Image (cartoon, rainbow, N blue to C red; front, side, top):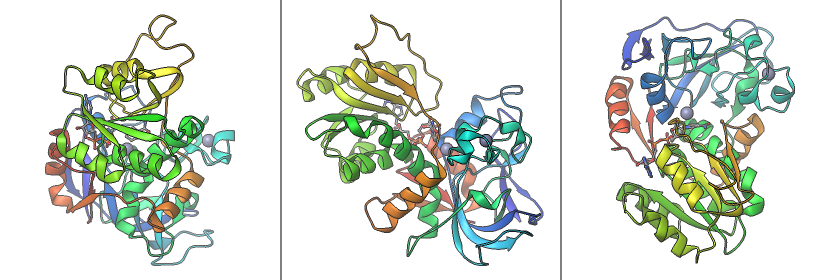
Length: 350
Ligand code: NAD
Ligand code: ZN
Ligand code: ZN
């Protein structure tokens, strides 16, 4: 089968030929419907190097995956061949307190998980940018409900799940008439806007450098847009909040500039979550941020939250904007993602 692999750190993706994987005990092979191209893959290609993780290339890219059950390993129950499934991407040990809650991204015993510490398929182990994918434990599969498009389910496993987890943490502060700032309206951000819109009565201020992304934000429910290229972007946001500041800020970019803009736009006792993985930092302290600003980072979401996201999509409360590409177009997809030419999510459909 053909697969899009990361051959080494600091390198582009390449198409290779691999044998179709087979399912061992407890495992499942799925035929891939879609594999989303996440901006994190660009960070993998450019920012990471030996020693940063206990795992490394080569591996097949694609950590947001969906498909149909193709082969069921010994001992796996409750699945049937051809059934549509989404893959919960972070693969923890299954036994620590976080994994018992389905919060595998915060596994406290990753070394005991399948793959010698690898985070999951597409993150150290072979992912979904291939015709077939081995899922190392059947518990990582969540059934796709009702008539939900299996291809749309792929981006929901990360571009959907990650913002959903971040939004849920701050829901108590998303009050009617309040303001939520969304920084970056790409794959994750356009889903984040929809979760805020579907779950809360707060107004959304969307910020991006691209007009097309701001238009998408409005289509997803944002009330206000600000171009962060504007020199007075921070003043525009303050003006929209009538000087009070935003109740909640979700930063889906994560560079120094967006973290600084988010903190400058926050209110006293607000929430700010850094989702973007670009590696930006901020000198947080008593004199550099509003009092009692709750500043945190986040990583992915739980298995039960993925089921919630799929259910919200199945009944039409949220919709992924995506474009399909073939495996051979993968290299170009990442170049376009890097150049900011994509709208919503690109999904590789072998
Ligand atoms: P994307 O490329 O689809 O979207 C990024 C958006 O941000 C684009 O619309 C871009 O125009 C905009 N942008 C870039 N610089 C900006 C700036 N200075 N100000 C305002 N907008 C700006 O990326 P994505 O796949 O949505 O991922 C977003 C970030 O989230 C990436 O860093 C990715 O690695 C990270 N991520 C984190 C997690 C997590 O669990 N924490 C999960 C998935 C992705
Ligand atoms: Zn991702
Ligand atoms: Zn664990």
